[in-house]
Amino acid sequence: MEQRQIFSYDDWERLIFEYDNELKKIEKEENKIENILKYYKIYYSDNIEKYRSILEKQVITYDKWIVTYKQYKETLFEKKMISKKSIIKYQNRVIKNKELGQKKYEIWNRMVWNEFEYINIKNYNFLIDQKSKLQNKIIFSEKKEQIAKQLYDKVKKQLDEHIKNVFGGITISQIYSKIEPHKRFTHLQYKVSFSEDSLPELYIKVINSKNEEIMPELFFSSAQLNTVALSVFLGGALCAESPNVNTIFIDDPIGHFDDLNVLSFVDVLRTIISNTDWQIFISTHEERFYEIMKVKLNPQYYNSKFLKFKEEGIIVEDTEWQE
Image (tube, rainbow, N blue to C red; front, side, top):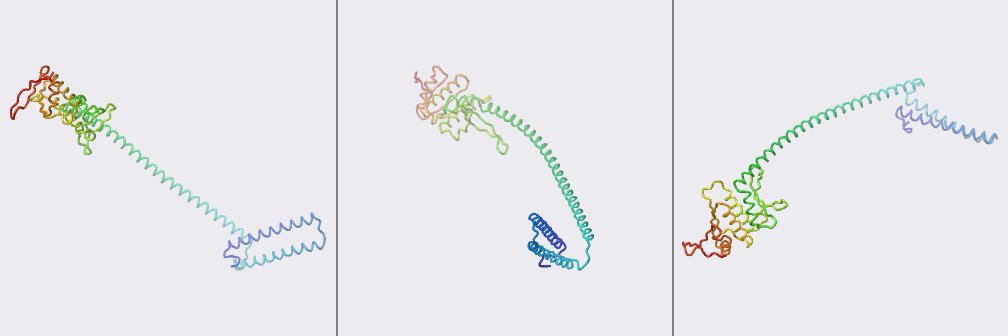
Protein backbone atom coordinates (compact mmCIF):
# COMPACT_ATOMS: atom_id res chain seq x y z
CA MET A 1 0.00 0.00 0.00
CA GLU A 2 2.82 2.37 0.82
CA GLN A 3 4.47 1.53 -2.47
CA ARG A 4 1.28 2.56 -4.27
CA GLN A 5 1.07 5.71 -2.12
CA ILE A 6 -2.39 4.79 -0.81
CA PHE A 7 -3.13 6.27 2.58
CA SER A 8 -6.75 7.23 2.28
CA TYR A 9 -9.96 6.52 0.49
CA ASP A 10 -9.28 9.35 -1.96
CA ASP A 11 -5.97 7.76 -2.90
CA TRP A 12 -7.73 4.48 -3.44
CA GLU A 13 -10.37 6.14 -5.60
CA ARG A 14 -7.66 7.82 -7.64
CA LEU A 15 -5.90 4.48 -8.29
CA ILE A 16 -9.17 2.78 -9.29
CA PHE A 17 -9.81 5.63 -11.70
CA GLU A 18 -6.37 5.12 -13.24
CA TYR A 19 -6.92 1.39 -13.62
CA ASP A 20 -10.31 1.97 -15.14
CA ASN A 21 -8.73 4.25 -17.73
CA GLU A 22 -6.11 1.60 -18.48
CA LEU A 23 -8.81 -1.03 -18.99
CA LYS A 24 -10.63 1.25 -21.37
CA LYS A 25 -7.44 1.80 -23.33
CA ILE A 26 -6.85 -1.95 -23.56
CA GLU A 27 -10.41 -2.60 -24.70
CA LYS A 28 -9.99 0.06 -27.30
CA GLU A 29 -6.76 -1.58 -28.44
CA GLU A 30 -8.54 -4.97 -28.65
CA ASN A 31 -11.22 -3.50 -30.86
CA LYS A 32 -8.59 -1.94 -33.02
CA ILE A 33 -6.78 -5.31 -33.42
CA GLU A 34 -10.00 -7.09 -34.29
CA ASN A 35 -10.76 -4.49 -36.93
CA ILE A 36 -7.31 -4.92 -38.38
CA LEU A 37 -7.73 -8.72 -38.47
CA LYS A 38 -11.03 -8.36 -40.22
CA TYR A 39 -9.61 -5.82 -42.63
CA TYR A 40 -6.71 -8.07 -43.60
CA LYS A 41 -8.78 -11.24 -43.25
CA ILE A 42 -6.27 -12.90 -41.00
CA TYR A 43 -7.65 -16.33 -40.25
CA TYR A 44 -4.52 -18.42 -40.15
CA SER A 45 -3.98 -20.29 -36.95
CA ASP A 46 -0.41 -19.19 -36.55
CA ASN A 47 -1.38 -15.58 -36.63
CA ILE A 48 -4.35 -16.14 -34.42
CA GLU A 49 -2.16 -17.87 -31.88
CA LYS A 50 0.22 -14.94 -32.01
CA TYR A 51 -2.52 -12.43 -31.28
CA ARG A 52 -4.00 -14.71 -28.68
CA SER A 53 -0.74 -14.78 -26.79
CA ILE A 54 -0.77 -10.97 -26.82
CA LEU A 55 -4.28 -10.93 -25.46
CA GLU A 56 -3.42 -13.50 -22.80
CA LYS A 57 -0.72 -11.19 -21.57
CA GLN A 58 -3.30 -8.51 -21.23
CA VAL A 59 -5.65 -10.87 -19.40
CA ILE A 60 -2.90 -11.66 -16.98
CA THR A 61 -2.58 -7.97 -16.36
CA TYR A 62 -6.31 -7.76 -15.63
CA ASP A 63 -5.99 -10.55 -13.09
CA LYS A 64 -3.15 -8.74 -11.37
CA TRP A 65 -5.24 -5.62 -11.22
CA ILE A 66 -8.13 -7.52 -9.74
CA VAL A 67 -5.91 -9.03 -7.06
CA THR A 68 -4.38 -5.65 -6.33
CA TYR A 69 -7.85 -4.12 -6.12
CA LYS A 70 -8.91 -6.76 -3.58
CA GLN A 71 -5.83 -6.03 -1.48
CA TYR A 72 -6.56 -2.28 -1.48
CA LYS A 73 -10.14 -2.95 -0.61
CA GLU A 74 -9.26 -5.20 2.35
CA THR A 75 -6.64 -2.74 3.61
CA LEU A 76 -8.77 0.37 3.37
CA PHE A 77 -12.10 -1.02 4.48
CA GLU A 78 -10.90 -3.86 6.76
CA LYS A 79 -12.73 -6.55 4.84
CA LYS A 80 -16.05 -4.79 5.05
CA MET A 81 -18.44 -5.45 2.24
CA ILE A 82 -18.93 -2.39 0.09
CA SER A 83 -21.68 -2.44 -2.42
CA LYS A 84 -22.15 -0.22 -5.39
CA LYS A 85 -25.19 1.22 -3.64
CA SER A 86 -23.07 2.21 -0.62
CA ILE A 87 -20.51 3.84 -2.88
CA ILE A 88 -23.21 5.79 -4.74
CA LYS A 89 -24.75 6.81 -1.43
CA TYR A 90 -21.39 7.99 -0.14
CA GLN A 91 -20.74 9.77 -3.41
CA ASN A 92 -24.10 11.56 -3.19
CA ARG A 93 -23.32 12.55 0.38
CA VAL A 94 -19.98 14.00 -0.70
CA ILE A 95 -21.65 15.88 -3.56
CA LYS A 96 -24.29 17.20 -1.19
CA ASN A 97 -21.64 18.37 1.31
CA LYS A 98 -19.72 19.96 -1.51
CA GLU A 99 -22.83 21.83 -2.69
CA LEU A 100 -23.57 22.88 0.89
CA GLY A 101 -19.99 24.14 1.27
CA GLN A 102 -20.29 26.01 -2.02
CA LYS A 103 -23.50 27.69 -0.84
CA LYS A 104 -21.88 28.65 2.47
CA TYR A 105 -18.91 30.01 0.57
CA GLU A 106 -21.20 32.07 -1.68
CA ILE A 107 -23.15 33.36 1.35
CA TRP A 108 -19.91 34.28 3.09
CA ASN A 109 -18.62 35.98 -0.06
CA ARG A 110 -21.85 37.96 -0.35
CA MET A 111 -21.69 38.99 3.32
CA VAL A 112 -18.09 40.14 2.96
CA TRP A 113 -18.96 42.08 -0.18
CA ASN A 114 -22.00 43.66 1.47
CA GLU A 115 -19.86 44.66 4.45
CA PHE A 116 -17.24 46.04 2.11
CA GLU A 117 -19.89 48.05 0.26
CA TYR A 118 -21.32 49.30 3.55
CA ILE A 119 -17.90 50.46 4.71
CA ASN A 120 -17.22 52.14 1.36
CA ILE A 121 -20.60 53.88 1.36
CA LYS A 122 -20.05 55.00 4.95
CA ASN A 123 -16.59 56.34 4.11
CA TYR A 124 -17.94 57.98 0.96
CA ASN A 125 -20.73 59.71 2.88
CA PHE A 126 -18.20 60.83 5.50
CA LEU A 127 -15.91 62.25 2.81
CA ILE A 128 -18.84 63.99 1.10
CA ASP A 129 -19.80 65.55 4.43
CA GLN A 130 -16.20 66.64 5.06
CA LYS A 131 -15.99 68.05 1.54
CA SER A 132 -19.18 70.05 2.10
CA LYS A 133 -17.82 71.42 5.40
CA LEU A 134 -14.51 72.34 3.77
CA GLN A 135 -16.29 74.05 0.88
CA ASN A 136 -18.34 76.08 3.37
CA LYS A 137 -15.14 77.02 5.18
CA ILE A 138 -13.53 77.98 1.87
CA ILE A 139 -16.52 80.15 0.92
CA PHE A 140 -16.48 81.77 4.39
CA SER A 141 -12.70 82.30 4.18
CA GLU A 142 -12.97 83.78 0.69
CA LYS A 143 -15.60 86.22 1.91
CA LYS A 144 -13.41 87.19 4.86
CA GLU A 145 -10.44 87.53 2.52
CA GLN A 146 -12.49 89.74 0.19
CA ILE A 147 -13.61 91.93 3.09
CA ALA A 148 -10.03 92.11 4.41
CA LYS A 149 -8.75 93.00 0.94
CA GLN A 150 -11.35 95.75 0.62
CA LEU A 151 -10.36 97.10 4.03
CA TYR A 152 -6.69 96.83 3.09
CA ASP A 153 -7.22 98.67 -0.22
CA LYS A 154 -9.28 101.33 1.54
CA VAL A 155 -6.68 101.85 4.29
CA LYS A 156 -3.85 101.82 1.75
CA LYS A 157 -5.64 104.40 -0.37
CA GLN A 158 -6.21 106.61 2.67
CA LEU A 159 -2.56 106.24 3.65
CA ASP A 160 -1.46 107.12 0.12
CA GLU A 161 -3.64 110.22 0.15
CA HIS A 162 -2.39 111.18 3.61
CA ILE A 163 1.23 110.72 2.51
CA LYS A 164 0.67 112.82 -0.59
CA ASN A 165 -0.80 115.57 1.57
CA VAL A 166 1.79 115.38 4.34
CA PHE A 167 4.94 114.56 2.38
CA GLY A 168 4.00 116.16 -0.91
CA GLY A 169 4.10 113.04 -3.05
CA ILE A 170 3.23 114.82 -6.29
CA THR A 171 5.54 117.77 -5.60
CA ILE A 172 8.40 115.42 -4.71
CA SER A 173 8.03 113.53 -8.00
CA GLN A 174 7.89 116.81 -9.95
CA ILE A 175 11.06 118.12 -8.30
CA TYR A 176 12.84 114.79 -8.83
CA SER A 177 11.78 114.65 -12.51
CA LYS A 178 13.10 118.15 -13.15
CA ILE A 179 16.48 117.47 -11.59
CA GLU A 180 16.54 114.08 -13.43
CA PRO A 181 19.46 112.30 -11.75
CA HIS A 182 18.76 109.06 -13.68
CA LYS A 183 17.98 108.72 -17.40
CA ARG A 184 15.66 105.69 -17.06
CA PHE A 185 14.05 106.02 -13.64
CA THR A 186 12.65 109.52 -13.93
CA HIS A 187 9.77 109.45 -11.44
CA LEU A 188 9.76 109.15 -7.68
CA GLN A 189 6.91 108.22 -5.38
CA TYR A 190 6.05 106.80 -1.98
CA LYS A 191 4.89 103.19 -1.65
CA VAL A 192 2.89 101.96 1.31
CA SER A 193 3.19 98.34 2.44
CA PHE A 194 2.73 96.22 5.55
CA SER A 195 5.27 94.15 7.44
CA GLU A 196 4.85 90.54 8.60
CA ASP A 197 3.56 91.99 11.88
CA SER A 198 0.89 93.94 9.95
CA LEU A 199 2.61 97.24 10.67
CA PRO A 200 2.49 99.92 7.94
CA GLU A 201 5.78 100.63 6.18
CA LEU A 202 6.72 103.51 3.89
CA TYR A 203 9.15 103.11 0.99
CA ILE A 204 10.52 105.58 -1.52
CA LYS A 205 10.79 104.07 -5.00
CA VAL A 206 11.79 105.32 -8.42
CA ILE A 207 9.84 104.33 -11.56
CA ASN A 208 10.63 104.23 -15.27
CA SER A 209 8.40 104.67 -18.32
CA LYS A 210 7.44 100.95 -18.26
CA ASN A 211 6.18 101.34 -14.69
CA GLU A 212 9.05 99.23 -13.39
CA GLU A 213 10.14 100.27 -9.93
CA ILE A 214 13.27 99.86 -7.83
CA MET A 215 14.46 101.00 -4.43
CA PRO A 216 17.03 103.77 -5.06
CA GLU A 217 19.19 102.94 -2.04
CA LEU A 218 20.00 99.57 -3.64
CA PHE A 219 20.98 100.81 -7.12
CA PHE A 220 21.69 104.56 -7.09
CA SER A 221 25.03 106.26 -6.64
CA SER A 222 25.70 108.73 -3.81
CA ALA A 223 24.99 111.73 -6.07
CA GLN A 224 21.71 110.19 -7.26
CA LEU A 225 20.68 109.38 -3.70
CA ASN A 226 21.49 112.96 -2.75
CA THR A 227 19.04 114.11 -5.43
CA VAL A 228 16.36 111.79 -4.07
CA ALA A 229 16.89 113.14 -0.53
CA LEU A 230 16.80 116.73 -1.74
CA SER A 231 13.56 116.09 -3.67
CA VAL A 232 11.95 114.52 -0.61
CA PHE A 233 13.07 117.39 1.59
CA LEU A 234 11.83 120.15 -0.74
CA GLY A 235 8.58 118.40 -1.59
CA GLY A 236 7.76 117.74 2.06
CA ALA A 237 8.58 121.30 3.05
CA LEU A 238 6.53 122.89 0.26
CA CYS A 239 3.48 120.79 1.18
CA ALA A 240 3.52 121.62 4.87
CA GLU A 241 0.11 122.81 6.00
CA SER A 242 -0.06 126.24 7.62
CA PRO A 243 3.62 126.59 8.64
CA ASN A 244 4.50 129.33 11.09
CA VAL A 245 7.18 130.61 8.71
CA ASN A 246 7.26 129.92 4.97
CA THR A 247 11.01 129.54 4.96
CA ILE A 248 13.29 126.69 3.88
CA PHE A 249 16.95 126.46 4.95
CA ILE A 250 19.34 124.33 2.87
CA ASP A 251 23.05 123.83 3.44
CA ASP A 252 25.22 122.69 0.50
CA PRO A 253 22.45 120.95 -1.47
CA ILE A 254 24.50 119.95 -4.54
CA GLY A 255 26.98 117.47 -3.12
CA HIS A 256 28.30 115.28 -5.99
CA PHE A 257 25.95 116.95 -8.51
CA ASP A 258 27.17 117.19 -12.11
CA ASP A 259 26.71 120.40 -14.13
CA LEU A 260 23.42 119.32 -15.67
CA ASN A 261 21.92 118.42 -12.31
CA VAL A 262 23.08 121.72 -10.85
CA LEU A 263 21.36 123.66 -13.63
CA SER A 264 18.20 121.61 -13.19
CA PHE A 265 18.20 122.22 -9.44
CA VAL A 266 18.58 125.97 -9.94
CA ASP A 267 15.62 125.85 -12.36
CA VAL A 268 13.58 124.17 -9.63
CA LEU A 269 14.53 126.95 -7.19
CA ARG A 270 13.54 129.57 -9.74
CA THR A 271 10.14 127.92 -10.20
CA ILE A 272 9.56 127.83 -6.44
CA ILE A 273 10.37 131.49 -5.82
CA SER A 274 8.40 132.56 -8.89
CA ASN A 275 5.20 130.62 -8.19
CA THR A 276 5.03 130.43 -4.41
CA ASP A 277 5.46 132.70 -1.42
CA TRP A 278 8.16 130.51 0.07
CA GLN A 279 11.49 132.01 1.10
CA ILE A 280 14.58 129.83 0.62
CA PHE A 281 17.96 130.29 2.35
CA ILE A 282 20.84 128.39 0.77
CA SER A 283 24.38 128.32 2.10
CA THR A 284 27.23 126.85 0.06
CA HIS A 285 31.00 126.84 -0.25
CA GLU A 286 30.77 125.74 -3.90
CA GLU A 287 31.72 128.86 -5.85
CA ARG A 288 30.67 127.37 -9.18
CA PHE A 289 27.17 126.69 -7.85
CA TYR A 290 27.05 130.18 -6.33
CA GLU A 291 27.93 131.85 -9.63
CA ILE A 292 25.37 129.80 -11.54
CA MET A 293 22.64 130.89 -9.11
CA LYS A 294 23.66 134.51 -9.55
CA VAL A 295 23.11 134.11 -13.30
CA LYS A 296 19.94 132.01 -13.20
CA LEU A 297 18.38 133.91 -10.26
CA ASN A 298 19.51 137.38 -11.17
CA PRO A 299 18.11 139.89 -8.61
CA GLN A 300 17.18 142.15 -11.51
CA TYR A 301 14.52 139.64 -12.56
CA TYR A 302 13.79 137.61 -9.45
CA ASN A 303 13.20 138.39 -5.83
CA SER A 304 16.61 137.11 -4.81
CA LYS A 305 19.58 138.33 -2.83
CA PHE A 306 23.18 137.06 -2.58
CA LEU A 307 25.35 137.48 0.50
CA LYS A 308 29.05 136.83 1.09
CA PHE A 309 31.22 136.39 4.17
CA LYS A 310 33.98 138.95 3.97
CA GLU A 311 35.60 138.37 7.30
CA GLU A 312 34.71 136.38 10.35
CA GLY A 313 31.25 137.49 11.44
CA ILE A 314 30.92 140.06 8.61
CA ILE A 315 28.32 139.52 5.87
CA VAL A 316 27.94 141.81 2.86
CA GLU A 317 25.56 141.79 -0.07
CA ASP A 318 27.01 140.67 -3.38
CA THR A 319 25.99 143.14 -6.10
CA GLU A 320 28.25 141.86 -8.85
CA TRP A 321 25.57 140.29 -11.04
CA GLN A 322 26.53 138.76 -14.29
CA GLU A 323 24.37 139.06 -17.34
